[in-house]
Length: 121
Image 1 (cartoon, one colour):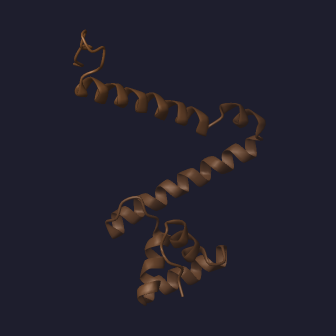
Image 2 (cartoon, helix red, strand yellow; image 1 turned 90 degrees about the vertical axis):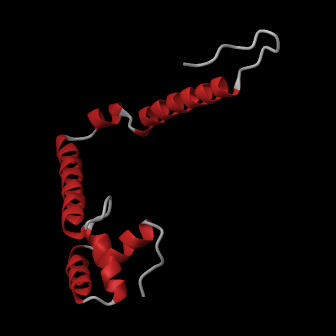
Image 3 (spheres, helix red, strand yellow; image 1 turned 60 degrees about the vertical axis):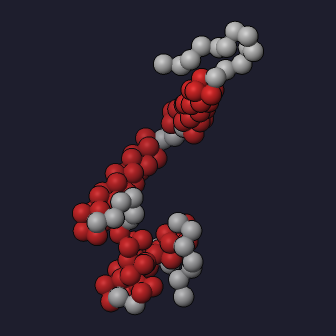
């Protein structure tokens, strides 16, 4: 429960200020979420584009789930783990990155750079 305003000085107590700041941040986060996704854009996209985005989202979620099951890491994809392994010289990382390069050139390197890691040699 927040503390009331001090009637004499007309200022908020420290805990009331913290609570007001938390409330402001919550409101800002909700507004940011609303700005991030414009629902009207979905109606402008074709059905094929919406299905493609959905499939990519599901595959990405599955990729992260499998990486967490097999490698024990959270919020990283298999290609990120393969990129780290290839950088360390592990054979399975090199093989996985070579296979992923068939689909997209330098896929493992792009995922690592996207996370802020140093580029692969």
